[in-house]
Image: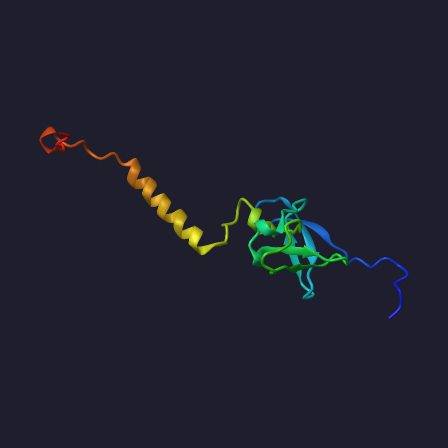
Length: 127
């Protein structure tokens, strides 16, 4: 193998509008010869994004899911537009967190219904 005389070629990408919310999204090629729609101008730290949702940009412009756990603390990644789209339901990123959120919602409902006060004859003896 010889030394590369020119810069690596970048695959063409583009922008398109989301059919749900109408916002722009980046259309980027993947390693699997497919396309993914990513949130534009968004590069969060990789360790803050669940492994199966991290898209890492390669030198040729393609992206791949980066499932290394834990990633380098300074590594940046991209996320799919559907995660940030206000018109699409948020996927179940952490099942245990979804269960916690549902239980907290039920608890909020229970607390928002005022309980009738105890009549004086049922008050506990405070000594």
